[in-house]
Length: 385
Image (cartoon, rainbow, N blue to C red; front, side, top):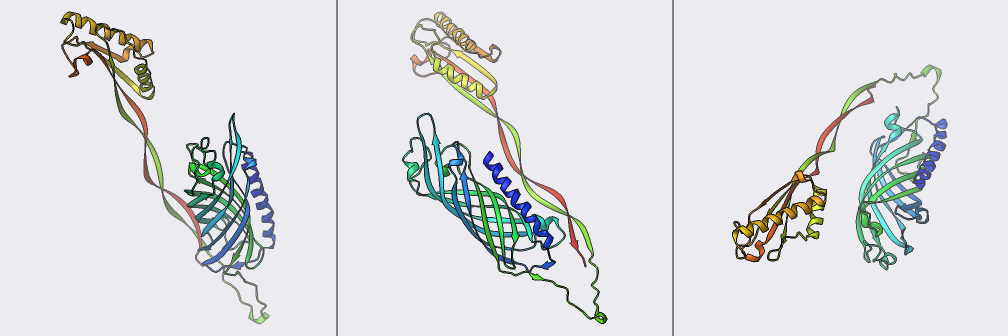
């Protein structure tokens, strides 16, 4: 993850450089809502099991939105350009190109005004989160290797997009500011034509410029004659505790019952338990389930032999089935067994009644998710005069 650390170091360095502008800060007032338009350019990489440093490509964005208050804003953000993927195994090593376009609705929270005591600062840090969609196309290079790239597509492909990121924004004039934004985007597994059984992550780093339509108005102290000195009333601030409700997901473990049945058929007078496929399937069931019980019942057909002989044959079939299971690692304590000779015929077809029927039962733990309401309190400082 060295590339993430380097993105983070660049973001931190830009933030520290921007903090020097606070020395020249003036008291200003901003009118809301404050509309803005932004353009950005930089680089991106979609992480995969390849040398990600060889997959960086240029990217560009533009956005427009509004700050509704000194703390909260929103934007419609568009990003796109070229992308790269790579595949490496013992036989092949290749890279491929494709194009993509992402559109997101982002919420923006100004951490500086959220924590600070004023509505205006020349340098601001925004926490950004949003959702939208992604469209990828021109994927011919990947589709040529569809035997290796299981999710390769030769037409356009839509995907969801979810974003979390941060931006440092520095005002340079009445209407303009420059910014550095770093964001992480998660998309469907099929985005880069490779199968990971989890979402694809795309890291985007960009420098940009923002134009703000609502100009900031400086509140400069006017020179007054000595005999007309105006005394401004002192500010009065108070605090209150706000309750914030939010949704949370909790997981509860529940046990699911599982049952599976196997049949082992025999030729006339045969008792050997030659059922490797059934043994493997029983072993897989016992591995997936806990607290298992295995019930073995053996039979003989009524149209062959006599009752005493058939009872002995079903007993041998039962004993050899029990031995085969215990030799395979099934605990003897979890096995119950019975033999019935020809007194019970489980099947209508006579030849099928030379049979051992094995039934396994057990429990499997699974996660049950549900949404619950939670709340937290937050101290808010507000001006009363």
